[in-house]
Image (cartoon, rainbow, N blue to C red):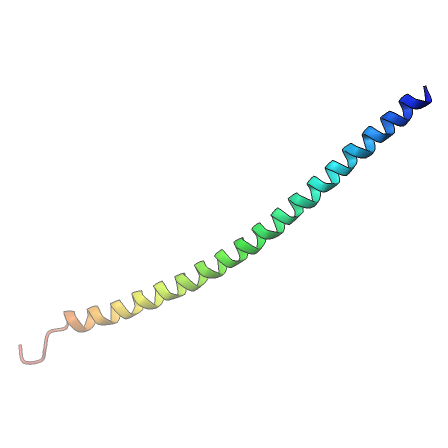
Length: 72
């Protein structure tokens, strides 16, 4: 009976060890994904700003092209 209890405890300890290792690995994955998401959000913000600037520049260029010269 005692040996069986020791075996059960050993099994539980092994399972706990594997689960603990899995949790650490998942935590690392989440951390890396969070870093990637932060970088991607920064890139999106930067690209959005650049796109807005390009749109503003094109609007200014279009107005100059659409205006008739004064001699017409």
